[in-house]
Image (tube, rainbow, N blue to C red; front, side):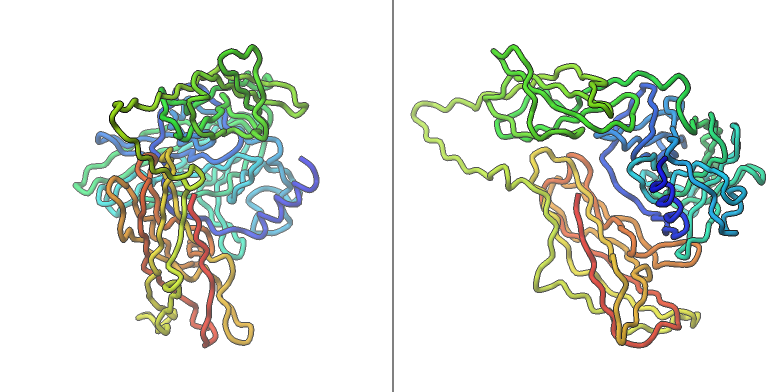
Length: 490
């Protein structure tokens, strides 16, 4: 790890980041049974599920597209050597070890060069469990060092979740519809087995449990240099109509930190493969035409020295003939240009100002509070591939008031609602985001999901809204404050 990376990691730990505990809806993941090593990207390592009366722990692997659900027994989580950092000279972090000693840290906020594991209860329905929560426990750690999972408050102070050096099991209550991340700290390199367990009580009083589930972690290099990398191309349908969008994805097994690809095409009559200019990522999208019928595609993965590490098997594109019309007929064609197939999020220019009522003291007399309503937000998806979408909002800067006074955007929270949607859409609201509270985080200073639609059920127009709740410390200066909410859809 270079010196610049070490300083950046140290600064991120000291500055702290409020954990985002909210549902991020995703398309229903397919199951995968191959053995994999996950070393970079997002994964819900501890994915709590309840199906057929049974509670289980899975791995939701979002490092591939489309995402897949895996058995923890098939996954090795790698903490790369680049995760190493020195313990800071801050007494709040003394639990990590002596000042200046080395730990290996997977951070709370995403670093694209490291693994970003979290826990997830977004598939659990409300009303199934008492208190709408499950209890997640770390019951055992076996390995060469100590393991600590902790989040941080707005001032960078640690909020402990699981800690192996002071005795196990440790347990936390996790509400349903939660998606959360933490810092994962390991005190030594080597192989670890972390044993987790989830327990809950059904509303009828019956208790359910996953039992003990082992998770394998490797801190540092894999023994033997790691398994050979395989490459496959996913996403090719059996047949396309002319002008359909084709999206191909190159998938590594196991997943590595390599991310440089090239795509190649070979059409009937050609002896050689031709490189597709400008395509160097893991995903390649294009428009199906009759001229491309029976063309083959491969992807190649390259190493740091631009050597070929892996080559996929070819996949073949089949494009249907347009239907023939009777001789006495006329054809009237109306078309929407492919460029117009898009995902758009918008608000009515004449209805985009939210005016919250003057804040009032709450019943306890310790907070200024006000409630309002977000103006309607429209999401329109015309993409032929129906990939689904997620709409989010964030207030990236503080509320600004008179004479330079400010307060944090985190003091505003929301309860999203789906106001309307088209036939065939499956739009669901995002989770409730409470205003910031010390030790718990929250608020719209971080990106939060307003609404989402799964794969295959997002095409059309939907309208989203939210109930807003502002909760401020009583020492906030009087005045009128404003801020801008940024809306995005992916």
